[in-house]
Image (tube, rainbow, N blue to C red; front, top):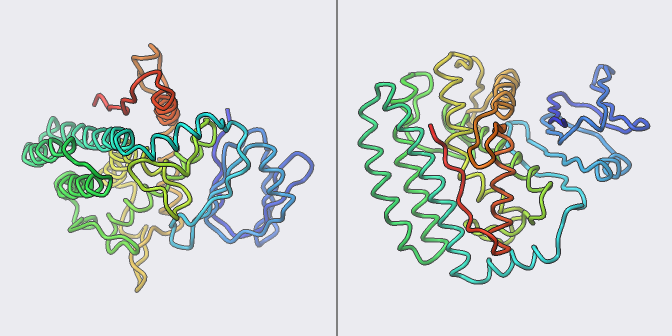
Length: 332
Protein backbone atom coordinates (compact mmCIF):
# COMPACT_ATOMS: atom_id res chain seq x y z
CA UNK A 1 0.00 0.00 0.00
CA UNK A 2 1.29 3.45 -0.88
CA UNK A 3 2.12 5.84 1.93
CA UNK A 4 2.85 9.60 2.27
CA UNK A 5 6.42 10.88 2.36
CA UNK A 6 7.39 13.90 4.48
CA UNK A 7 10.54 15.92 3.76
CA UNK A 8 11.56 18.30 6.55
CA UNK A 9 15.13 19.12 5.45
CA UNK A 10 16.22 21.30 2.56
CA UNK A 11 17.85 19.64 -0.42
CA UNK A 12 17.35 18.21 -3.88
CA UNK A 13 14.70 15.73 -5.02
CA UNK A 14 15.40 13.94 -8.27
CA UNK A 15 14.69 10.87 -10.31
CA UNK A 16 17.29 8.11 -10.57
CA UNK A 17 15.96 5.48 -12.95
CA UNK A 18 12.72 4.29 -11.31
CA UNK A 19 13.49 5.62 -7.86
CA UNK A 20 13.19 9.01 -6.16
CA UNK A 21 16.27 10.24 -4.34
CA UNK A 22 16.35 13.07 -1.83
CA UNK A 23 19.79 14.53 -1.11
CA UNK A 24 20.02 16.87 1.88
CA UNK A 25 22.49 19.72 2.41
CA UNK A 26 25.08 17.36 3.90
CA UNK A 27 24.96 15.09 0.88
CA UNK A 28 23.09 12.34 2.70
CA UNK A 29 20.80 10.44 0.34
CA UNK A 30 17.37 8.95 0.99
CA UNK A 31 16.10 6.50 -1.62
CA UNK A 32 12.33 6.13 -2.04
CA UNK A 33 10.84 3.44 -4.33
CA UNK A 34 8.25 5.29 -6.36
CA UNK A 35 5.67 2.52 -6.25
CA UNK A 36 5.41 2.90 -2.46
CA UNK A 37 4.67 6.65 -2.46
CA UNK A 38 1.15 8.08 -2.24
CA UNK A 39 2.10 11.77 -2.05
CA UNK A 40 4.97 13.97 -0.89
CA UNK A 41 4.81 16.76 1.71
CA UNK A 42 7.67 19.25 1.58
CA UNK A 43 8.52 21.49 4.56
CA UNK A 44 12.11 22.45 3.66
CA UNK A 45 13.53 24.25 0.63
CA UNK A 46 13.49 21.94 -2.37
CA UNK A 47 15.35 21.94 -5.69
CA UNK A 48 13.91 19.83 -8.51
CA UNK A 49 13.56 19.83 -12.29
CA UNK A 50 10.89 19.18 -14.91
CA UNK A 51 12.08 15.60 -15.29
CA UNK A 52 11.02 14.98 -11.68
CA UNK A 53 7.56 16.47 -12.28
CA UNK A 54 7.10 14.26 -15.35
CA UNK A 55 8.05 11.23 -13.27
CA UNK A 56 5.59 12.21 -10.51
CA UNK A 57 2.86 12.64 -13.12
CA UNK A 58 3.56 9.21 -14.61
CA UNK A 59 3.24 7.68 -11.14
CA UNK A 60 0.22 9.75 -10.00
CA UNK A 61 2.00 11.36 -7.06
CA UNK A 62 0.91 14.77 -5.75
CA UNK A 63 3.49 17.13 -4.27
CA UNK A 64 2.39 19.46 -1.44
CA UNK A 65 4.44 22.45 -0.22
CA UNK A 66 4.45 24.11 3.20
CA UNK A 67 6.28 27.30 4.13
CA UNK A 68 8.80 27.90 6.91
CA UNK A 69 6.01 28.08 9.51
CA UNK A 70 4.22 24.94 8.37
CA UNK A 71 1.51 26.75 6.38
CA UNK A 72 0.25 25.00 3.27
CA UNK A 73 1.20 27.13 0.26
CA UNK A 74 0.35 24.99 -2.78
CA UNK A 75 0.51 21.68 -4.61
CA UNK A 76 1.77 20.15 -7.80
CA UNK A 77 -1.42 18.40 -8.88
CA UNK A 78 -0.41 16.05 -11.73
CA UNK A 79 -2.46 15.55 -14.85
CA UNK A 80 -5.56 13.65 -13.78
CA UNK A 81 -5.96 10.02 -14.79
CA UNK A 82 -9.43 9.43 -13.43
CA UNK A 83 -11.22 12.55 -14.68
CA UNK A 84 -14.63 12.13 -16.23
CA UNK A 85 -16.10 14.76 -18.53
CA UNK A 86 -19.60 13.69 -17.58
CA UNK A 87 -18.97 14.00 -13.84
CA UNK A 88 -17.29 17.38 -14.26
CA UNK A 89 -20.39 18.58 -16.09
CA UNK A 90 -22.58 17.27 -13.26
CA UNK A 91 -20.39 19.06 -10.70
CA UNK A 92 -20.74 22.31 -12.65
CA UNK A 93 -24.50 21.74 -12.99
CA UNK A 94 -24.88 21.31 -9.22
CA UNK A 95 -22.73 24.39 -8.60
CA UNK A 96 -24.71 26.62 -10.96
CA UNK A 97 -28.13 25.47 -9.72
CA UNK A 98 -28.48 27.31 -6.39
CA UNK A 99 -30.98 24.82 -4.95
CA UNK A 100 -28.78 21.82 -5.77
CA UNK A 101 -25.68 23.65 -4.55
CA UNK A 102 -27.32 24.64 -1.26
CA UNK A 103 -28.56 21.10 -0.71
CA UNK A 104 -25.00 19.79 -0.83
CA UNK A 105 -23.50 22.75 1.04
CA UNK A 106 -25.96 22.25 3.92
CA UNK A 107 -24.96 18.60 4.16
CA UNK A 108 -21.32 19.59 4.71
CA UNK A 109 -22.35 21.98 7.50
CA UNK A 110 -24.70 19.44 9.08
CA UNK A 111 -21.93 16.85 8.92
CA UNK A 112 -19.44 19.22 10.55
CA UNK A 113 -21.78 20.20 13.39
CA UNK A 114 -22.82 16.61 13.99
CA UNK A 115 -19.20 15.54 14.41
CA UNK A 116 -18.53 18.54 16.70
CA UNK A 117 -21.43 17.24 18.82
CA UNK A 118 -19.85 13.79 18.93
CA UNK A 119 -16.59 15.25 20.25
CA UNK A 120 -18.42 17.17 22.99
CA UNK A 121 -20.57 14.16 23.93
CA UNK A 122 -17.40 12.06 24.29
CA UNK A 123 -15.93 14.48 26.82
CA UNK A 124 -19.26 14.89 28.64
CA UNK A 125 -19.29 11.11 29.16
CA UNK A 126 -15.78 11.47 30.61
CA UNK A 127 -16.99 13.94 33.24
CA UNK A 128 -16.92 17.38 31.56
CA UNK A 129 -20.63 17.93 32.19
CA UNK A 130 -20.31 21.71 31.79
CA UNK A 131 -19.97 21.07 28.04
CA UNK A 132 -23.70 20.28 27.96
CA UNK A 133 -24.38 24.01 27.60
CA UNK A 134 -22.12 24.20 24.54
CA UNK A 135 -23.90 21.16 23.11
CA UNK A 136 -27.27 22.90 23.52
CA UNK A 137 -25.95 26.03 21.81
CA UNK A 138 -24.71 23.95 18.88
CA UNK A 139 -28.08 22.24 18.63
CA UNK A 140 -29.78 25.64 18.48
CA UNK A 141 -27.52 26.92 15.71
CA UNK A 142 -27.85 23.65 13.79
CA UNK A 143 -31.60 24.29 13.55
CA UNK A 144 -30.84 27.50 11.61
CA UNK A 145 -28.94 25.71 8.83
CA UNK A 146 -32.01 24.64 6.87
CA UNK A 147 -33.42 28.18 6.55
CA UNK A 148 -30.29 29.68 4.94
CA UNK A 149 -30.69 30.58 1.28
CA UNK A 150 -27.17 31.48 0.19
CA UNK A 151 -23.71 29.92 0.56
CA UNK A 152 -22.49 33.13 2.23
CA UNK A 153 -25.20 32.94 4.91
CA UNK A 154 -24.46 29.26 5.38
CA UNK A 155 -20.74 29.96 5.79
CA UNK A 156 -21.63 32.49 8.49
CA UNK A 157 -23.70 29.88 10.33
CA UNK A 158 -20.86 27.38 10.05
CA UNK A 159 -18.44 29.99 11.41
CA UNK A 160 -20.73 30.73 14.36
CA UNK A 161 -21.05 27.02 15.12
CA UNK A 162 -17.30 26.61 15.11
CA UNK A 163 -16.82 29.59 17.44
CA UNK A 164 -19.26 28.04 19.92
CA UNK A 165 -17.48 24.72 19.61
CA UNK A 166 -14.05 26.32 20.09
CA UNK A 167 -15.27 27.80 23.38
CA UNK A 168 -15.17 24.24 24.77
CA UNK A 169 -11.47 23.70 24.01
CA UNK A 170 -10.16 25.22 27.25
CA UNK A 171 -12.40 22.89 29.25
CA UNK A 172 -11.27 19.83 27.28
CA UNK A 173 -7.53 20.57 27.43
CA UNK A 174 -7.44 22.28 30.86
CA UNK A 175 -3.87 23.47 30.22
CA UNK A 176 -2.38 26.90 30.87
CA UNK A 177 0.25 26.27 28.19
CA UNK A 178 -2.50 25.67 25.61
CA UNK A 179 -5.19 28.19 26.53
CA UNK A 180 -7.38 29.01 23.56
CA UNK A 181 -8.98 32.46 24.17
CA UNK A 182 -10.20 32.91 20.57
CA UNK A 183 -9.48 31.63 17.07
CA UNK A 184 -6.62 33.49 15.42
CA UNK A 185 -5.19 32.75 11.99
CA UNK A 186 -2.41 33.97 9.73
CA UNK A 187 -0.62 34.12 12.05
CA UNK A 188 -1.90 32.08 15.00
CA UNK A 189 -1.37 33.97 18.25
CA UNK A 190 -0.99 31.07 20.65
CA UNK A 191 -0.02 27.40 20.72
CA UNK A 192 -3.50 25.92 20.47
CA UNK A 193 -4.32 28.08 17.44
CA UNK A 194 -1.00 27.02 15.88
CA UNK A 195 -2.02 23.37 16.31
CA UNK A 196 -5.45 23.95 14.76
CA UNK A 197 -3.95 25.75 11.75
CA UNK A 198 -1.31 23.09 11.20
CA UNK A 199 -3.76 20.21 11.62
CA UNK A 200 -6.30 21.79 9.26
CA UNK A 201 -3.57 22.27 6.63
CA UNK A 202 -2.67 18.58 6.83
CA UNK A 203 -6.32 17.63 6.46
CA UNK A 204 -6.82 19.90 3.43
CA UNK A 205 -3.95 18.29 1.52
CA UNK A 206 -4.95 14.78 2.63
CA UNK A 207 -8.44 15.31 1.21
CA UNK A 208 -6.95 16.84 -1.94
CA UNK A 209 -4.75 13.76 -2.46
CA UNK A 210 -7.79 11.52 -2.03
CA UNK A 211 -9.82 13.60 -4.53
CA UNK A 212 -7.00 13.04 -7.04
CA UNK A 213 -7.82 9.32 -6.94
CA UNK A 214 -11.52 9.84 -7.75
CA UNK A 215 -13.42 11.26 -10.72
CA UNK A 216 -14.17 14.51 -8.88
CA UNK A 217 -12.74 17.90 -9.80
CA UNK A 218 -11.20 19.63 -6.75
CA UNK A 219 -11.80 23.08 -8.29
CA UNK A 220 -15.58 22.87 -7.93
CA UNK A 221 -16.79 23.07 -4.34
CA UNK A 222 -20.26 23.83 -3.06
CA UNK A 223 -20.00 25.35 0.41
CA UNK A 224 -16.79 27.20 -0.47
CA UNK A 225 -17.16 29.29 -3.59
CA UNK A 226 -15.42 28.34 -6.79
CA UNK A 227 -13.81 31.67 -7.66
CA UNK A 228 -10.14 32.54 -7.89
CA UNK A 229 -9.19 29.86 -5.37
CA UNK A 230 -7.72 26.89 -7.18
CA UNK A 231 -9.18 24.16 -4.98
CA UNK A 232 -12.40 24.30 -2.99
CA UNK A 233 -13.98 20.82 -2.88
CA UNK A 234 -11.27 19.63 -0.47
CA UNK A 235 -12.21 22.50 1.88
CA UNK A 236 -15.88 21.41 1.81
CA UNK A 237 -15.12 17.78 2.63
CA UNK A 238 -12.53 18.71 5.28
CA UNK A 239 -15.22 20.52 7.30
CA UNK A 240 -16.88 17.16 8.00
CA UNK A 241 -13.68 15.53 9.22
CA UNK A 242 -11.98 18.35 11.18
CA UNK A 243 -13.61 17.56 14.55
CA UNK A 244 -12.80 13.85 14.55
CA UNK A 245 -9.44 13.93 12.74
CA UNK A 246 -7.77 17.21 13.72
CA UNK A 247 -9.39 18.34 16.96
CA UNK A 248 -9.39 14.99 18.69
CA UNK A 249 -5.76 14.45 17.73
CA UNK A 250 -4.87 17.86 19.22
CA UNK A 251 -6.64 17.03 22.49
CA UNK A 252 -4.79 13.71 22.67
CA UNK A 253 -1.38 15.29 22.00
CA UNK A 254 -1.94 17.90 24.73
CA UNK A 255 -3.57 15.68 27.34
CA UNK A 256 -0.88 12.98 26.94
CA UNK A 257 1.92 15.61 27.10
CA UNK A 258 3.23 14.56 23.71
CA UNK A 259 3.52 18.23 22.79
CA UNK A 260 4.80 20.84 25.25
CA UNK A 261 5.54 24.55 25.21
CA UNK A 262 9.14 23.87 24.12
CA UNK A 263 7.81 22.42 20.84
CA UNK A 264 6.74 25.89 19.66
CA UNK A 265 8.52 29.04 18.57
CA UNK A 266 7.19 32.54 19.14
CA UNK A 267 8.08 35.70 17.24
CA UNK A 268 6.57 38.77 15.65
CA UNK A 269 5.15 36.45 12.96
CA UNK A 270 3.08 34.57 15.54
CA UNK A 271 3.33 31.18 17.23
CA UNK A 272 4.33 28.08 15.26
CA UNK A 273 5.29 24.47 15.80
CA UNK A 274 9.04 23.83 15.77
CA UNK A 275 10.38 21.21 13.37
CA UNK A 276 10.47 18.60 16.15
CA UNK A 277 6.90 19.57 17.10
CA UNK A 278 5.75 19.17 13.50
CA UNK A 279 7.39 15.76 13.31
CA UNK A 280 5.61 14.62 16.49
CA UNK A 281 2.27 15.91 15.17
CA UNK A 282 2.74 14.26 11.78
CA UNK A 283 3.78 10.93 13.29
CA UNK A 284 0.58 10.79 15.34
CA UNK A 285 -1.42 12.13 12.37
CA UNK A 286 -0.27 9.24 10.20
CA UNK A 287 -0.94 6.76 13.03
CA UNK A 288 -4.48 8.08 13.24
CA UNK A 289 -5.06 7.87 9.49
CA UNK A 290 -3.92 4.22 9.57
CA UNK A 291 -6.20 3.33 12.49
CA UNK A 292 -9.09 1.12 11.45
CA UNK A 293 -12.67 1.24 12.72
CA UNK A 294 -15.85 -0.67 12.03
CA UNK A 295 -17.74 0.69 9.02
CA UNK A 296 -21.27 -0.80 9.07
CA UNK A 297 -22.22 0.09 5.44
CA UNK A 298 -19.41 -2.19 4.19
CA UNK A 299 -19.61 -4.62 7.16
CA UNK A 300 -15.84 -4.47 7.66
CA UNK A 301 -13.14 -2.31 9.17
CA UNK A 302 -11.72 0.60 7.20
CA UNK A 303 -8.96 3.09 7.97
CA UNK A 304 -9.60 6.70 8.87
CA UNK A 305 -7.98 7.70 5.57
CA UNK A 306 -10.43 5.43 3.72
CA UNK A 307 -13.35 7.25 5.36
CA UNK A 308 -12.41 10.31 3.30
CA UNK A 309 -12.33 8.37 0.03
CA UNK A 310 -15.67 6.71 0.86
CA UNK A 311 -17.27 10.12 1.41
CA UNK A 312 -15.92 11.26 -1.95
CA UNK A 313 -17.49 8.24 -3.62
CA UNK A 314 -20.78 9.15 -1.92
CA UNK A 315 -20.53 12.65 -3.42
CA UNK A 316 -19.99 11.09 -6.87
CA UNK A 317 -23.15 9.01 -6.44
CA UNK A 318 -25.07 12.10 -5.32
CA UNK A 319 -24.00 14.04 -8.42
CA UNK A 320 -24.95 11.12 -10.65
CA UNK A 321 -28.38 10.88 -9.01
CA UNK A 322 -27.77 7.39 -7.62
CA UNK A 323 -28.07 8.14 -3.90
CA UNK A 324 -28.29 11.33 -1.77
CA UNK A 325 -25.01 12.23 -0.05
CA UNK A 326 -24.92 11.72 3.70
CA UNK A 327 -21.64 12.89 5.26
CA UNK A 328 -19.69 10.59 7.55
CA UNK A 329 -21.07 10.66 11.08
CA UNK A 330 -18.78 9.59 13.89
CA UNK A 331 -20.36 7.08 16.22
CA UNK A 332 -18.29 8.10 19.27
